[in-house]
Amino acid sequence: MSDKAYNITKHARERYAERILNKKDKLEINRYVAENYDKIDKDILKMIVYGTCIYTGKNPRKDKLGGTTQLSIYTTGAWIILVNPDKLDVITLFKIDLGFDDEFNSMYVDKLMKKFADSQIKVEETKEKVLIENEEIRKNMSENNDKIATYREYIKKLEEANNGYKAIMDANLIKVSEAEEELNAVLEKIVTKQ
Image (tube, rainbow, N blue to C red; front, side):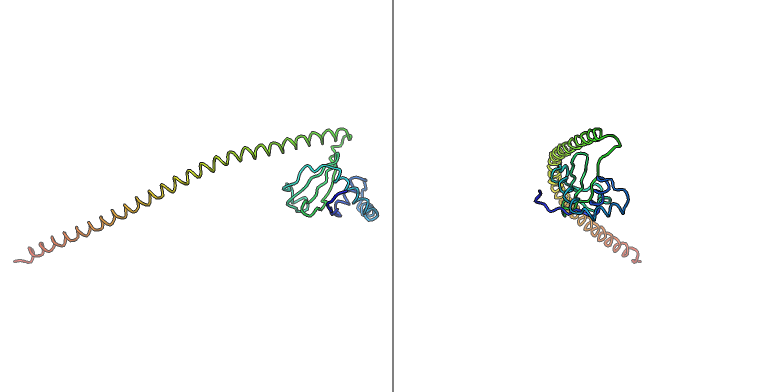
């Protein structure tokens, strides 16, 4: 049937008994699962093999769906089967049932699948658009980085020039001090000569 070895979890078997066979209480569900273990596994596997994998990727609700970060979603009619694609664990299964007849539910599922397909197309188009836009941004950033490097070199030269000017100013202060000392020496001679 399938070359993949799916692991049907206890939870998935219980949901099969509850949701497909309408077993109501926990005891009835557990009894059915224990007595029909192989049949349940085969039926769920058929749902996967003959269904359609509509998505494999990041799990949008990992907190609620077994803690897995990746998720595969299979559909078969109005039924949804959730699988951990890394371990091939079948997490759960459920029917999209809005409380109306199967025809209405099927129409809803068809519209939902169309909307999902349209969303996937939009994601791909957006990725392509963003890829082009990001390439232009990278080019601009590279040009800016070149300018920054040029300006940094220019700034470095200006800082070196300022350091030179500071050294000249410091030397000028020494000249002023020397001139003042000379003045003071003359003043001292004037004051001390009587």
